[in-house]
Amino acid sequence: MKVVEETMTLIGHLTELRTRIWRILAVFIVSMGGGLYLSPKVLRYLKSVPPGSNMTWNVFSPWDGIRMYMTIAVVFSLTISLPYILYQLWGFVKQGLHPEERSAALRYVPYSVICFLTGLAFGYFVVFPMSFAFTSKITKSMQLVETYGVAQYFGFMCNIVIPLSIAFELPVVVMFLTKIGVLTPTVLRKMRRYAYLILVVVASLISPPELISHMMVFIPLVLLYEISVLLSSIVYGRKKSAALAESAGA
Image (spheres, rainbow, N blue to C red):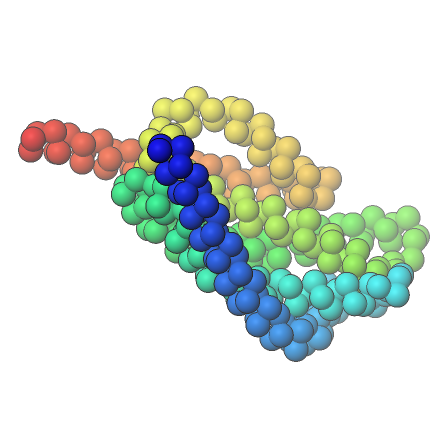
């Protein structure tokens, strides 16, 4: 009897998951229409601002133009439909979470969006132009002709901007994990030297290979880690005070 109930529960979860996936696909396809309409306009805008305005974009394959057209449309569609996607995912996973975990997840979602957009802006307006200027300088010093493909340009940009955007989520992730008891400030402090080593590697991978550029990326990443430690201490302290108050009241 227990096996039958577990099987029925599993089938019910799979049915619910399939329904939510179909809803997500429907919203994604509808927003994709708007992305296809705006894709040329977005591409023209990116071409009109530095460093894109300083070069001629080329295509090296008959598919490059279509690829960029569809890529921008997909990114636009994902951005527009992301809140609905998160809502559907939340509706599916919240049943397996404790009330405290549900509350923490809902509370930190807005902050995660803010941190992601901050990292996106920092990567696009600071690190990306700096990295492109450095590589362009090296190219010119070697007396090479700068002929850039649009696909290669966007690939270079995404390899810098996306990792930074994800890295800026660190404070929110640490706060959430502290809230549900996975991390503590003590653990983060003990991990500091290893975390710094990882941040050095990350900064060297997404910035030009010279000291000033490394430091311009490394320092914000270190600040993010230290802010994460501070926020973890605050969350842990509040959690401990609430537990003491609850035990005293009992």
